[in-house]
Length: 195
Image 1 (cartoon, rainbow, N blue to C red):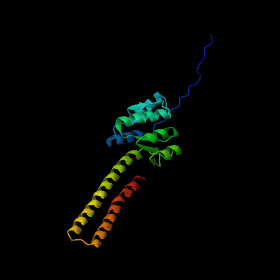
Image 2 (image 1 turned 60 degrees about the vertical axis):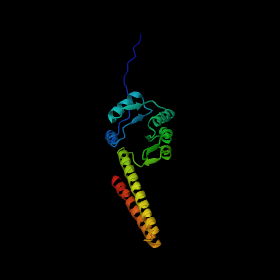
Image 3 (image 1 turned 135 degrees about the vertical axis):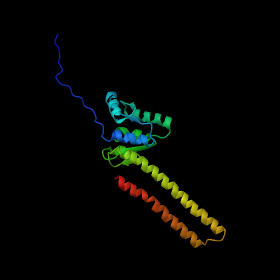
Image 4 (image 1 turned 180 degrees about the horizontal axis):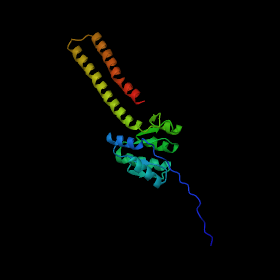
């Protein structure tokens, strides 16, 4: 009986991005508690990368349609689900998620076109920034709406009481419009700092 010998063995695996663990920690500190890794990679590699990144739940060896099913299951449990992906295999799941985020620079055209948001770099630290920026944007929108409605209500009351003229109401409306725009422009300053 002839014995065969192994003369060499090659193993290839994806390397984790250096900023992945930090980004996961930052997302958790922002209140994003349920993080799931969906991948087509084999289970051993996926679990090793997830451990290193700090992700607890992993679904591995998924085909694109199985990723969609996994996202649908998460939407059923949590109502709102964000999916981050960069490949053509991620596009159907990005479309099914409540919010699809494509990693733009290295992402496929299909993923970028399908996603709701395309980050124009492959820097995972942009994800926590995106969460913070969108929360800040919503706060500014709420302030702007309240301010606009308050000024309009004030001038409706003053007009009904006979203390305001049409020209004063027009000036106040234009003034509050400029104030709302100036308040919203603060978001650009924060965007420039993050770039």
